[in-house]
Length: 366
Image (cartoon, rainbow, N blue to C red; front, side, top):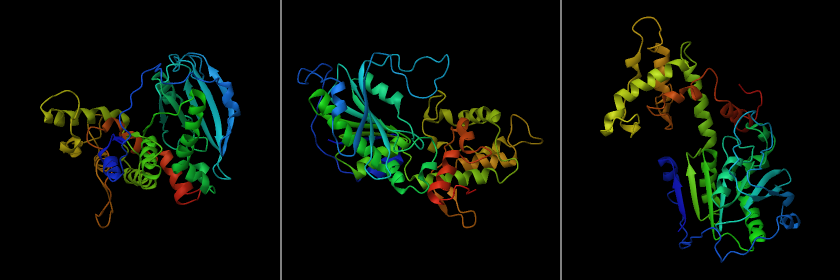
């Protein structure tokens, strides 16, 4: 049975019509005797696949992996507990303007017979190394892709429609099409079960995969799916415009804990347990006007503009002239500690980048 797990009700409602495929239960334990002994990692360098160039193969010792790029001095090694694996790096070119970087990691021992692809975040532009390391530690063969570009903005998209397609859906599919025969060549056995695991952009990649390529994966985890991306970015920029339409609209970050505490005090116990968690934010109808300053601005109250910003951040976006709802997505009461992301002095950078490069196709768009 094809299982699609969603972390949001919105994503679940979108994916409800998707077909389910009965594959039957399959369970493997590390070292299952039905799995063949791995081939040499080096032998994968000569593997020939359509639109795929194997760039390098490498046996990585336990805890020895170092992610490309600058490291953080003095920070603990995030890959210290990663077991030994065969690392395959490849470039995928399904179109003449594609330059998709992908990596496939294959546990040197203890493979559980399963493939787990992992998704990206934001505009992607990087290989998801921490998620890959977690997958390998769990015994999975895994793969990740930068979706065809480098960097966390949409600058790659201007004048490159094929790269937009790669980011939108093609890179994840092509990576999986390449990963499965690589896994087969290494272990002498194709994956018996294939999973996809992603959050945010990875969640959007997950439901897009299910819709466009339902045979790629047997089960999918789609967390916090960033679906309907360009509308989402537009809503974010619109909220920023509302917040900044008042000279006192930006809520100082120092006030956010005060706001959050007030909301918790009002709504935490609605579920009968006061535990610092609002069980169902839909039941919390906190009026931020209760925090309005009685006189001058101060650290324990909100100005008129800040009250309006708090309401805008936690309400559907509406047409200012007609009152018609444009988009239902918004933050919920209890999310005050994160208000600065969308309620700052400037629009969220990745959203403004998307509008400039994909929607308006003008890098100077303001």
